[in-house]
Length: 424
Ligand code: ADP
Image (cartoon, rainbow, N blue to C red; front, side, top):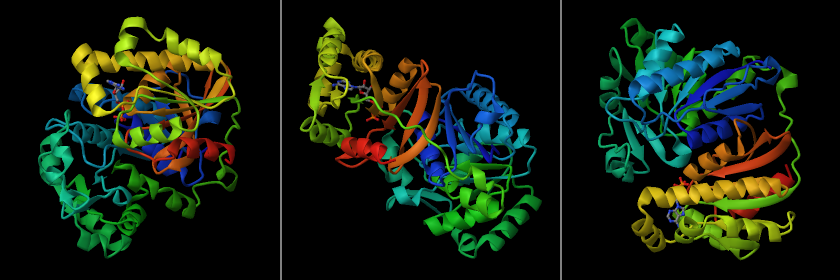
């Protein structure tokens, strides 16, 4: 299959979000966790290949090296256009890694210029006159100002990017974008002839994103959030880059037991767990008991359930309970104990015949996919914006996985997820 776009994402749930938006096109999308070690099989290359790295806050040299290896793999797999995906809130430290990785990719793709388009209007992220807004607030006044790893205290993208890159940073503002793709292309060409390699682009709505995609879909390197990437497939189709036979992705039908495993304590997950616990057999995990006695009791509970009945196992708790566990065990240990237990339970559930897994929690999803030995996911139907069903093969068996980070989805997400899979 023609590889239309090779994508490198700087974290795991960001990669899933990107994959989901690309999959809206109906074209095949593959997500690979970490730099693929397996030899590339050209017959298995999807139209969109996404490599999920975990390098958002890594030291610059490590992030650049990982991205370079991902680039090499994608290029060898046949990619000639590349996408560098970062967060729609431009999460990065003063050193990087958005700029340094983009600089490296500009050199590797032998191009003169790239664009930076983090805007995701559907999720309230917009860029106006080079400033990033979260809803109606400037980024620097939004809760992102207190992020534990990447506090964003400046909303000016030109100021944020300039120290991270070699050379000048330019802006194509909303006045240009609103004039349409031809005017935008002319602006990019003019900036390029002025020697400007890095161009921030304003976007406040999906129409802006469509204009930007129309003007830039054929550039060798694009960078941004998932929303601009989601606009690209229509232009590849219009340009005849997609063969008709490549249009529909054939996804496996997965039967077998189902389970929801939740390690997220975010507000929306708490509501989702409360909702689903009232409908199916459920078991609550207590981190303090897990730290003392391990996951044996939970595995025993699982063995007593019929593989076919839907079930829920969760460590999800109210903030006070989380605080108590953290005071007793330490913040890191409490998290590790829960992640280790849910990983063991996921492996036990697989042995017990479970083939459909819904996992709540970004870190939890990382731990469980790793424990199950998942390295390659095919992307299926979206359950909620940014949360698709995915499919993987482990031990010769196909499983379906829905990986949901904290606040995604509605209150009935867990039941909706299984309904969606049945009718896929
Ligand atoms: P989210 O996507 O909502 O941020 P994550 O899985 O990324 O969820 O993070 C939640 C973290 O909280 C995980 O490390 C998990 O192991 C930990 N955790 C889950 N339940 C509890 C609990 N009851 N007490 C303390 N920590 C918990």
